[in-house]
Image 1 (tube, helix red, strand yellow):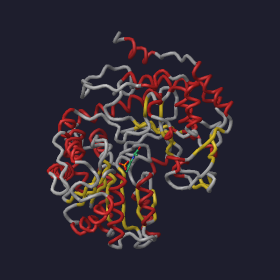
Image 2: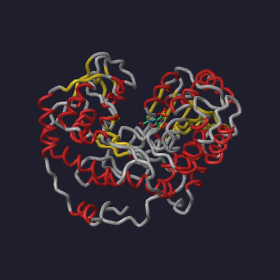
Image 3: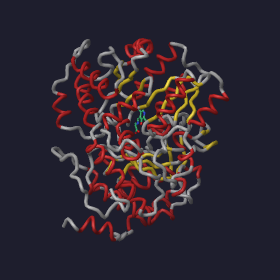
Image 4: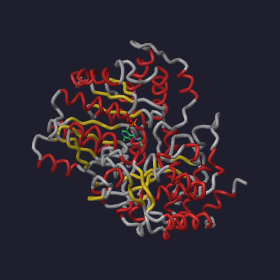
Length: 507
Ligand code: F0G
């Protein structure tokens, strides 16, 4: 995409066409009806029925459209308890794509995390006073990590420079910060887990240089180095696109190099494997001991280590999926769509995290809804507003997930960032859907300054990393919210020149 983002016709044909469709049933809902739905969902977007959502950018996890090759592979699913041929294909695909030797199945990413951390704890590697360091652990990883050890997120300086600061690899883990942490806690840092791309940190990639340097440092200091590899292929795309020396290399080669630096990895197959469910834990050939130590956890929690909570057909879909998502045309099209949404919002003056992430666009809600008090959950308020105005569902990644709070949901120490994340499912939405969302944002943008109040938590609040899923809230001022929604809906934002070209030329 050119820097203007919009004016050019694509010079390459998209990587797929559509064979099956799913109706959007919520298209006829009015804003007034959505306001009622929000109230009955206790102002938590996770409690909405998907039938009432027009565009679902809540997550890119398990929500992708599979290819015809994946669907046909599923017909070959071998559902045997032991020795299923589908597991053999799953294992072979992970070995071929990553070069890692040992493969354990898991029903999804968080189960893979439990398998890894339980295995490490069983060996005495993880103890309550040991440390897992990361560029940032996502919610479930943080949940499992803190179950066994202390977790420390170490972003890089470029990330901390703020949403508007442009840098190629804001997903790097600051090696200087890791060295300081190790220095302050001699012998305590046992694991470094690099999340690629960094979901908590804007879907930003880590560079090959960062991966290589972390690997060298960890090996010198007896620290195990793992990837949370949920979006490994998207990370590889950014390395090819941005890092000197990689432009001519095929994605598959870049992926092999990335994994050559780690001791192992956890996978959620619901992201870059483009499956609806599934996951894996991988170890390099140096770690047969770790592999065996983790097997009892799989058996106890997931099933035998030749299916791990998945059906044979799921393993077939994953084996095919990881092969397809490590192809450049697919990644270019997929990430290009996210970048287009990013450009359309940025042009409106919305404070998006720059540059665009691989799977999602992140809006700095702390900056965007300044009139709403920080204590009233700006990102969650923006999520509710976006849904009420246009039926678009997105998720807050900030205070509700990561701030320190008391048992009543009152923030005692705000999270380092307060984002609204719009995660784009893979191969699901078209250009028209993206333009619709951009149009909804124009309305949101026109009315946002009238929004002066947010939400307050009511009822039971556990105060953990999972409250965002099920906590109940109420609007601090229903009248103010409804008036801002009415203002937004009535707004008739004009198209600018670039958007007119996009919209009118094809007619
Ligand atoms: N790691 C990362 C980086 C993730 O983004 C997720 C899930 C997981 C691990 C857990 O995987 O869902 O298969 O158990 N992220 C989803 C999201 C839910 O919306 O970003 P899982």
